[in-house]
Image 1 (tube, rainbow over the protein chains, first blue to last red):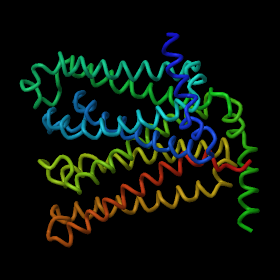
Image 2 (tube, chains in turn blue, purple; image 1 turned 90 degrees about the vertical axis):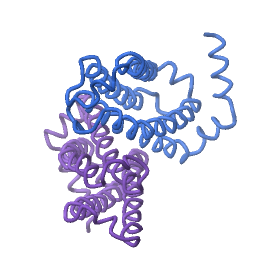
Image 3 (spheres, each protein chain N blue to C red; image 1 turned 120 degrees about the vertical axis):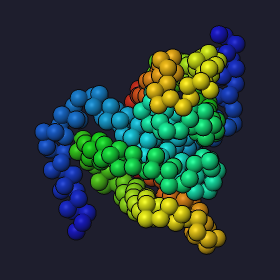
Image 4 (cartoon, rainbow over the protein chains, first blue to last red; image 1 turned 180 degrees about the vertical axis):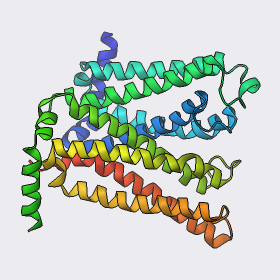
Length: 167
Length: 168
């Protein structure tokens, strides 16, 4: 834990973090990119989740929906992580002390875990049911859980803005 | 003249009981903003996915009219939710938006995005191969899709920027 703190404090003291802190335009600019990419992450993964729940795109095979959408989700996620990291290092100590920030990171990890479980276990027999309008329970569970988790991520993310001390 | 009228309007709005409730109940504004952002995520992603399909970057195995039918109709009911949550946010903090040029930029961009989306939806409904007939149409389609992506990104940027340009 101590090492992690030192590691993070190294970035927080960097010239880059300084620039983001001091420049009036840089923070809102990076933040806008962050909001935009998160919107695309959540909006696109929702397409997959609703298909798994059998609520939308039901006439397309699940694998087709996944292979079309996930590249968009992952690209947007990469931008969200990059922009989020820049925002984070500008004020790392405060963010780490913010419960909503910690919860948000935890929830993103849970969303990743949910996805891994789906691909690793629930989707093993995907070819058998991928044309079904209503996929089996484990798949529906993965879809429902994913929606719940991402809505919570957005909720925590917005709440960070209301609970961080004004700079 | 307009400035004075707007200033009066914000004062009147801020004095309404609804505004008072929104202002004094701490969780209302964050909650409205969260619903608003979730709605923006749905509308934005729906538009972008169709735009990317016009560029033939994804879902090439599915004809454009099918993709458009799958995503574009979602935009309208969700826009209604955005209108309601957005209006309540204005009632709660009228000065933040109504006296803020970034807000009007956002609304102008939104008008453009709505026109583009309606145009796209109608053209595809009128003739499934509307944007694929010839090379000229393909280029025009890609131009419209690019414009749509830029305008929607502009809306999201302006939306976030309202917080940084609000009147003191």
